[in-house]
Length: 70
Image (cartoon, rainbow, N blue to C red):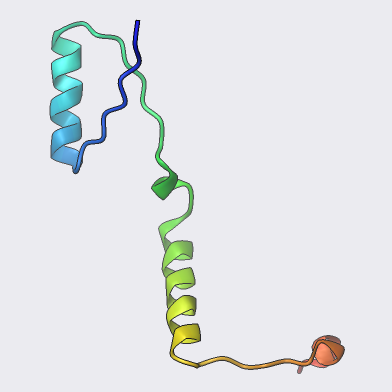
C-alpha cells in the first residue's frame, strides 16, 4: 500500500476531494497543516512586528537597564 499526500489549493478543492473519497469508500484522515498551528491574531501581530522592524520602528534597550523600564 501507499500513502497519498494531497495538497488542495482551496476549500472547494478540499471538499471535492473528500466527497470523491467518501463516494469511493476510501478511508482517509485529516491533519491540520503548519499554517494552522498558531492563532491568526498572533500571526498578524508577528507580521506587523516584522514590518515595523524592517521599517526601522524599533527601540534599543541596554540589557543592563532591562529591569528599570517604566
